[in-house]
Image (cartoon, rainbow, N blue to C red; front, side, top):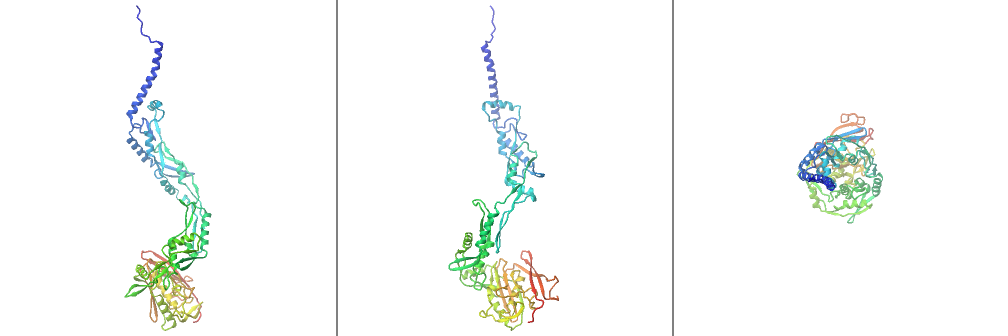
Length: 565
């Protein structure tokens, strides 16, 4: 009997052939699953970031690797090529940095494709490297100043049109285009990723024209508006008081507010501090016999046993209350020339309390001049000294003799006496008061105060310091002393039959000294000089308590052929 061997049937053979690929796939899926499970959160095998292997690293290790790359990249040279010009700095200085969270996420992200294809891609990863670029970010707040520093003088900034505001006019000064490497354009040119950490980065950049944010035409329209509203007088009305101030006085306070968030166009504004000072000095007429400016109650000082003591004035209704500057600003910006403002009542006691805080405590300037006794002019010298004794000049205000004393009249106690008018000797009511002016001028000169208005005699008078004196003629020829200190300044004139002395009491802020004097031809002048006429220039050096020094000059022009007296 013949024994038969087991031979698969054709159908069985086909079944084996078909099962083999399934078995291979099953093995592949199992291997992929086991490898994925073993790997867990680790970065996929054979993964590189900017050429640095991170495959198989734990999340903490990947973060550490990326942080090290970021630290290294910060010193990578970056070249900004603007035509033939090359500007070089490091990536860190330019605000170009590694986006560490994005780099870590990319390194840790496995295959996110169709799930049935992942085992096959995993199989390929066993022999193929997955190389990822290093993602970057740009910090514009760091890039902006870095570009300005790199460009230096090559950067031309845009110039905004601006207002030039003086008492004479409010005008527009045109703007100008600039040219620079802008932050936006350079940021767009910088790479968003790099393939290697230490490889230098080179990018093409180009300077762009940068236009002002405001147009000349719109700023010019604002200047014209400010000019028009201040052409005439501005009337301030306060509780029955009506004060007229020349509009031109407000012009220096105008400012330009650029366009910005919530304001698409530039606008006019006013400097409130300047408006406040203007109201204080103008609305009440400045320092006057019965009070004004910052001293509406007219508080004065007396000297008792060598100590300055405030003397009460009177209660005063003053223009204007604390809210006035804001209301004036609003009114002017609306184009109004009559503006309602609140009045303010200031008591005499409040005036004394305020004056006591001004630091009036010592003599800071003093001068004495001599004159013959018994002449009519002496009466005028004594009268003007009596009128001004104890007057207070608040900080920042200007004392004008003509404004304070007014016209010299017989009703006010002045008499007719010799004077110089238009270069001629004449008799005039108030003649001789120039001696008071000269003495006050010199006290202020050596006290370091500003002297914004003065006029020397046209003929040199030997009893006065040569080139350092002043005359008076109401209303045009004046002597004005500006208190340029943070303290009050008090005038304290005294006299004898043949002399007048003017003291200035305050807290010492500066001292003045004569440090030079020349004639019109540049030759030295003084007591020994032969010529006592012509143009004389006197130099003063002021030394301030903080050690600063400043020089200013005073001018005189004496007639070389004076008329006979």
